[in-house]
Image (cartoon, rainbow, N blue to C red; front, side, top):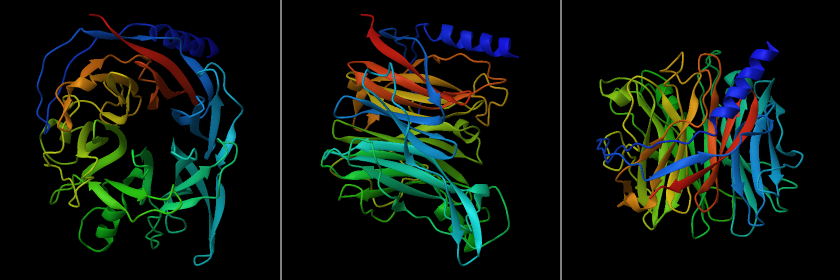
Length: 421
């Protein structure tokens, strides 16, 4: 057994050094358009294990250190690197799991702290958002919600939790495994210092189900809250996008955001349960945008909104989701996870990361005129293993880290986009 694991790890290390090719994709409103490019390639360094854990998120701080926030044993930790990711500090506890006693129901429940994201604010504070999840989805005892914590000393210590989006504690309806709340937050600091947090939310769907307005409790939308005081108080939630149309059950989830040239670009995982077009079969990625000075419209961005577009042609036969997006000097870079070679292609189980690189020069009027795909930098046996919950960290110029979770640990690898012309 040990020899088998050693062989698989050796294979993983070897293939990450292979260069990647590229392919173009989509335009607007979900309509595909084509063309190919061989104008650049991505070269890879050596994959490195950072620590045990998962769902890693990495950013560079103002003092040039790298910070990695991640989940492990139902708590959130941070590590820091002063040598660009070669070595890492011991872990600092950002928020620990805990036991919560519901006085009304006279029951206790263990609460997980998981799925962090963070950003450094203009004043130097570090704001970290976290999903709190009651064990067994017992949301009649504790809400599944978004909280945050702030470090004012460069990540050494962290404040008590700050209510960011509370969702709600529901009435007991029996034990089930359907989440009923908020999760998967993403932090964006606007040029004016205002902070936005985007996240997946089931709350409106489940509330409508309880009110008899929907026949199912399933479904997700993307919600956003804002803070104008550095993360200490937050606005009410605003639904940004929701693909639920009529009797359809929509899934808009796992949002990530980036600003560029006066626009906010939002990328999500998207699915409709019913229908015959490709995006209705398996999860795929969609994008939408708004002008910075205007913000998101008051009306919800529905399934058929002209604001939506695909960053690559949707795939009917396998899952492509869990996106993350950043900017380098000349490119947008998107990482997601694909089940193309998985034993369970529609569910996303046993998925592996892939990379899309999009020249910043192709962005116009809030959309991309073309996207350029590189094959997955990590080749694994997708009948047995997953490498998922990926993220990215720009390192300067057109270099970036890919952060992935593989075999219960966080691994990083450096990619460099090189112009071949």
